[in-house]
Length: 188
Image 1 (cartoon, rainbow, N blue to C red):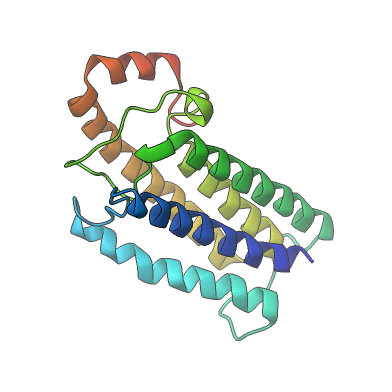
Image 2: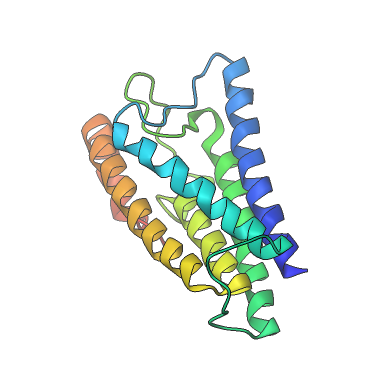
């Protein structure tokens, strides 16, 4: 059961991003800004697709590279489900809090309003925290070394993206953003 929930989590995350981007597109807002500021972002999708395959492979018994579980207890897998649920809830709350300012990537041409309420009142980067919770949860569900490598690499990539975004936000919003940074932590 936890294995199927890991797959469902990926499908729900993708569904939420795509539906939000399509809703904004209907309103004339281009939410998909991925790779426009930094072309190296295009190195991420192949690794993400391989990650998706690994999760699906572990859940459905397809061929995979990692077979031995690091934490083979059933209780650990259910704790992973709780992490995934928390990540999904935080992600949904973040999307709602974002409103029309939601973007995939940094939109330097048409940035939205600086979000400081809702999920952004407790974390400056709740979407990245949500993704990290989901990845940690999926590692706990399957507990294979390759998913642990992905978790560590993803946290590093998220932090890299957060630093790039913060530099842009400081430049664009100035003192308003600096005041916000003084009130709310980067992650939690």
